[in-house]
Amino acid sequence: MNKGKERTIYDKHIKRLMDIVFCVVAMLLLIPIFIICALLIYAEDGGSVIFKQKRVGINKSYFTAHKFRSMKKDTPDDIPTHLMKDNLKERLTGVGRFLRKYSLDELPQLYDILIGNMSLVGPRCALWNQEDLIAERDKYGANDIRPGLTGWAQINGRDDIDICEKAELDGYYAEQLRKSSISGLLMDTRCFLGTIVAVIRADGVAE
Image (cartoon, rainbow, N blue to C red; front, side):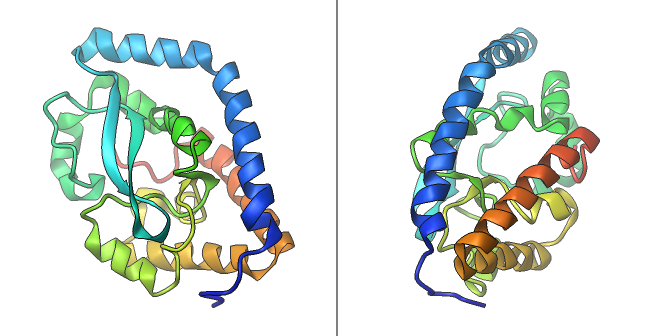
């Protein structure tokens, strides 16, 4: 593990530039999808269509993450999905279930990527109170890089794997990112392509 190793050129400059270009293009192309999702959410349950959460960013700093609201408007905003267990199905709206199945609820996080709080690829940002996951990621230096919309753990189990395994996968991603510019680029490419497959199959989604 290369925890503490100096950042590569890819990690410092190229990755961020790619994030910005991708977000600008994606947000312009997805304007109709954003509008349709917002209208469907509001029509079913009323209230705000955007769900905001306090999340853990790079170096364990905090930021506000944005998602399309997939649960009923009275759902607490600081409980991790895996802790809801049997109550999750009751809390999800009909539209929300569809959005989560195909990860459409994550689309507003393109804004979080654009302003620099997140990256397209990286460890999935933890809730501020997920102390167990944060502590596990510390073992691998996975808290020292910018969190991502998708990542190595996301395409290798997502909601179906436990915290220890998730942190280890995030650590492996962090190690490859620090290793060299080539390994970082290849890893991000694998994650990006793997995400497309995972979204089509709706792999590892708790609902």
